[in-house]
Image 1 (tube, rainbow, N blue to C red):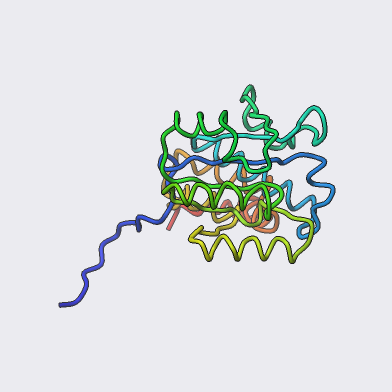
Image 2 (cartoon, one colour):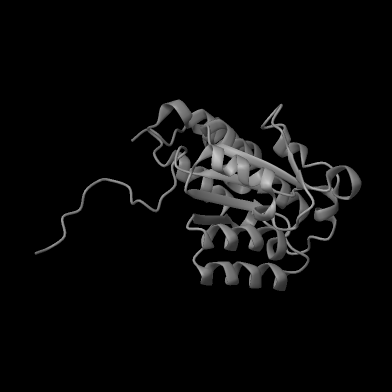
Length: 219
């Protein structure tokens, strides 16, 4: 008997309400040594993720390490998206070993977690593998993560994927939350974020709208 297809999304796709986003250590000192991705691109990708999460109402945790004594403030592109949001500062390299962070994870109560931050091989590998071991479904936004070398970043991603963590990109994350251009209530939000932080894709949107009044939601 053949399979009968239906116009419904698969359960592995993210929705705004089914996960918690955890953004880790997007701080000046951590960024200085990040070499696998250009600093401007990293900041744009992190901003795109943060503004998409805020706009779609995704439960989000922002955490830093030694903010006052060593690593400096979190990128303003992120904190601007979450005005007044408390930053959870830690001493632990592994976010999952911080009781304050875990308290918030448990309070939110989502079984699906999405991570991004600096550095991939330490600050992202630690919590993703720890959460995975405790039964969580875990995703990483790979181009909103950075490390001291291409080798360090790639080996870290490879290690996580082998363990069962699911990789994705910043733009993919936002478009997966939107998923249908006919969803008019978030259309301007999504295209607005893309125009500001989406690089060449955003330029394409600006061009199409300016020259032709084009809209992805029309047929």
